[in-house]
Length: 354
Ligand SMILES: *Cc1c(COP(=O)(O)O)cnc(C)c1O
Picture 1: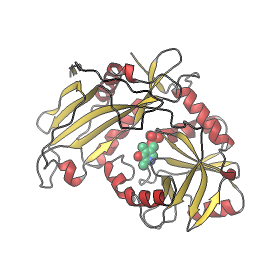
Picture 2 (picture 1 turned 180 degrees about the horizontal axis):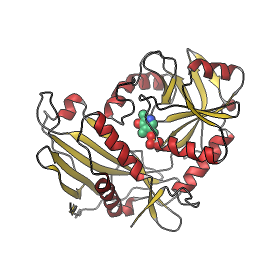
Picture 3 (picture 1 turned 90 degrees about the vertical axis):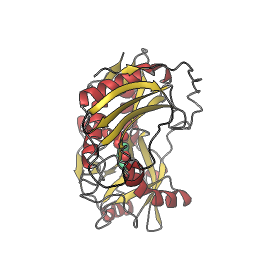
Picture 4 (picture 1 turned 45 degrees about the horizontal axis):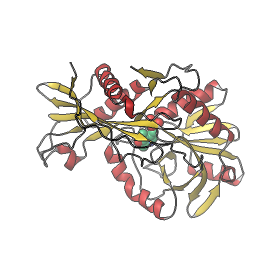
């Protein structure tokens, strides 16, 4: 399929990356492709960024049939633009789509479309270390019918937004509230899919946490509310007594690409990394005995985010005296130097943009 390109005649003023608010300003173009049951995917195009026109009966508005991805384009000091493991995002988008019975993408074509789109928006990638172009591919059911049946029409869209340094004022550890009422996902549900619905289910607890002054929620499993799952939009890792422990992918945890990359780096450094069930009691015990040495979240937005305080059942536990831990810092430095091209990409994770 050939991607039709219609360039804007009215390019926008590019914002200063040091002052942009995450996800509010978008580049000049967007990628769109339509799907129908008869035709399959058709009419891939890169067009000026604009509103989408959708029938109010479109399934996405009523039944939440939407999946998405998030990745970044980075500028290296040698002036090259690159993506970090983009094929992983496309693969996960297809896995998410499969769970919601949305149509599958041809992964090779989707990757090509993504790269083409980013290459057209290359000038929008901010150049300073720590800044990047956040890319949001999403796929949803667009057919105008309220009846519940298989999905006959869908759209795949890619938009992008320049982002400043997540850690403008240095890497400050975050405070996290362990949520013991609401749950985000259950096994057999959509937890492993990156879908809007999971975020809808998370909103209430997120607001509660924000009101109490916490930055995010740490989720427990949906059945027993006993096992740690993940933090807001990040996976979570703990260093207990020298070992690294992270919740295993049970089906209700989002399989993060940053998580996967961190595990590979940590193993390469010789750490004992355990992917297993971790109960909140085990964390509580470790906190009481002073064996919880470090805790951090992993995700594309913040890369690695140190956790300085955990609250569980109204008790606050400080971790590493509220300071960033040694491994947390080392991981952050390693990943960001690969992503921003300050270090040799020995894992072959980066994909160049022409
Ligand atoms: C996207 C996401 C993550 C992090 O995934 P990355 O691929 O590392 O960005 C973790 N948890 C949830 C719920 C997410 O949506």
